[in-house]
Amino acid sequence: MNRNYILESFLKNKEKLDKRNAEGIEKYRKGQFILKLPAKAGQKVTVKQKKHAFYFGTTAFMLGSFEKPEKETQYKKAFANLFNQAVVPFYWSDFEPQEGHLRMRTDSEFIYRRPAPDICLEFCSEYGIEPKGHCLTWNAFVPKWLEAYFPEERKEILERRFKEIADEYASKIPSFDIVNESASNYRRGIKQLFENYDEYGLQLGEKYFPDNIKILNETNEAIWRDYYTEGKYMAFNMQLQEFIRRGIPFDEIGLQYHIFKTTEEMENPTVRNTYLDVESMLEILDIYDSYGYPMHISEITIPGSGLNDENEEIQAYIVEELYKTWFATRNMKSIVWWNLVDGYAAYAPLGSNEGENRCGGGLLRFDMSPKPAYEVLDNLINKEWNTSFETVVDKNGELSFRGFYGEYEIMVGDNIYTVNLDSDGIEILL
Image (tube, rainbow, N blue to C red; front, side):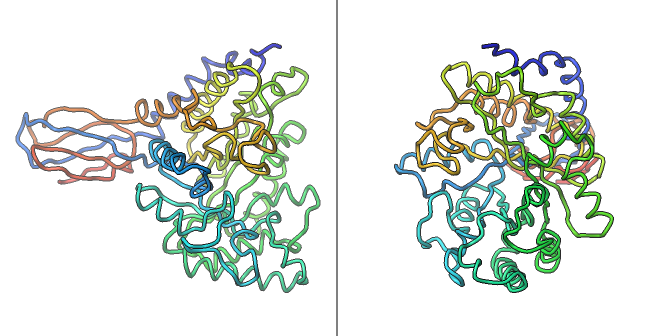
């Protein structure tokens, strides 16, 4: 098999991509900061970046779902080492399995890969991670009991769902995927809820979550796959234009990036893969970036499965190139990996090679050992994209430096200060 085919576009465009990414990261992810310190000229100062302003996330779906307690501990440690955002599940069929019975609390009945929100929020609080809700309106994972209701009744029930979640979690979870995958669902003719459910869901988001970030999230079919045949007329782009024209409310946009294939399936040179075609990828990013809305690469699966250990190295190479590309994109706000551990993905029994497990899209193996892709992200997030150093105060009692946006710990003598440096040219008096 021609294994280089998978990486062909990255290798061919490496110089162009490296230049674009280096410039974008320097321009959009870093700022010039001035700290006015209670210190004498020449006094030693230690600067440590503790958190990124940019969000690196993954799902918290496996909390409380592992077959061994030690795996739970390893999962939390690996999670918190890389990520500062956790996706909290609000899938309707599992959040409200019986009508009127909401699984919110830590003692809620167990459902695999669907921890109750309070379990996730406890984890986030313990590790200083920001939660994100997913998702409030979707045609999939609709509860069975909803089928007994007519469309107009379903609208009333959906509004009740929004109100109940908002009453409990609007003050605790800053952002939500309000509507999920509607452009692709309409293209496939899926109408389980009611006509124009996406517009109605966004209106409910505006009503019940006025102070939260409301995200319109879309899947592969209406973006990357569509681009191959439709170009700029891909379904999600057309939906955005229509919603903006009509004033349908949303705050940010999510672009999913699931490659649900094995590495071997990606090697077929007769299959055009717009996901891994650098020129197409950059054109697609430019199209959505031009709207000016904050953007998220909201769900990611990069295969690392198959018959050859080299597959994990291929996964790691692709992960590094993609994360650099996304991190360097002007309006990008977050990058969210979907399944942290192999063997625990959707539509499959635990530990099997079925469903999404067959892709091997985790950053950790089933035994919880880190794959090369995990090590790549650890190096990028915690080292290459981290600003930490020791220096001395200048003659004016100031410290000026350029660094990545985020939360910093500043040590001057025996005093430690915590500051948020999240805008260029910021001046802070400590």
